[in-house]
Structures are given as structure tokens and as C-alpha cells.
Image 1: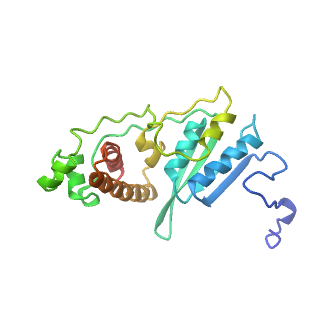
Image 2 (image 1 turned 90 degrees about the vertical axis):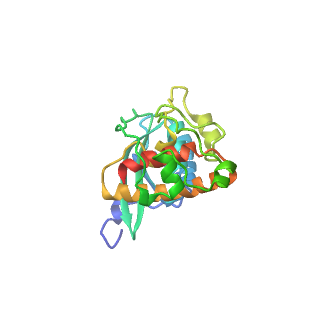
Image 3 (image 1 turned 180 degrees about the vertical axis):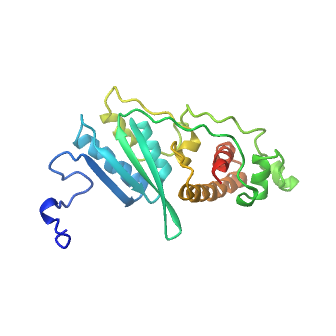
Length: 239
């Protein structure tokens, strides 16, 4: 700041999140850490600075993006904007979240399968043609679902799904007027704002790669792969 001649316009505070800030900020940028840690920082900031006007958060999670989105939507936040960037070959997302704001409309999506080159054979078949190319023994041991359910953008995940550790505390300080924003499983991973940009497509490819790994694990353990197949179908619109 001194080298740039801006020292007189900046104040520096050593703080755990926003805990030590002397007054409410208009905008808080929380970047470069895991999504669950960011969720905890945001939750504590709401407790420290309740009421209006709400703090506008700019969030850049390095991991657990789906958990951060889940926390925000279930705690009454609106993700007003999502921007995507690629640095050193890796895609990143930057979220702008506002507490209590109206939810933006989600663009309509078509249910199409990911490109064949992006999916393993049995995944591609189950998501597209309805056939399963695994061996008969594997199919008998871990049968695929009869059909993927239609996309439902207005329902939440099971309450047994993994969530940030601070969710219970978040519910405690949320005003009674706070409205939880609905979301689908695919929204957690792809977001509700899906720009047709190269950076977003790179992000979706990374989401697909992780979904395929989870899908292999579900097939191996006999779990229900319906959510992952639905995610892969939804992601295919952007590849």
C-alpha cells in the first residue's frame, strides 16, 4: 500500500475472518481457502453484523464449492453472480453472495448426456442409450437404476447429506423471515448461473471428472448413482 501511495486510504487489521473488524464493511472478500472454512467465516460475520444493510460477500473457494453453495442457499443467501476463471490450467469460481436478496432466475437446461469421450463406457451408456456395457457379473452385483429421475430444480437434498459444520449455528441466528433458496443436486456442483464461456466449460469438465470418480465408487459399493448420472447429463449441455 505504501509503495502504491495508498497507505492513507487503507487500514490493516489482524483478524480471524471479520471478527476483529471495528465496523460493518460494505463488501467482504473471502478468497483462497476451502469452501467449508469460508462458510464458517460468513456465518460468524452474520452474527457479528446482523441487520441491514447486509454485507456483500465476494467468495473464492479453492475446494468444497458445493458445500459453500449449500450453506449459502440454506441460510437465506442469494448467489447474485458467479464468475469463472482459469489460472495455470485450473478453473476457479468467484461467487457474489448477498443475504436475503431475491434469487436470480436460472436459465433453462436440456437433459443431454456428456460427450462420450468425457465419460467411461458404462457411464456413457447408462446416461445416454440406457444400456450398460459392464460385464453381466458386475451388472448383477451393482445394477444401474431403471431410469434417471427428471431434473427437479425446486427440491433440496436429503437432510442426511453432508453439510458444513456451522449449519446448525447458521439456523440459530437466521431471522425468521429468512427464506431458504431451493436448489437441486446439479445446482450444487454447476451453480444456477451458467455462462457459456470457455472458463465455465473448463470448470464443468472438472466437475464431470469428480462426478465420474464418485460414480465408480457408487457402482463398486452398490450405492444409488441416480444423482451423479443426473449431474453428468446436466453437465453435458456445456461440453
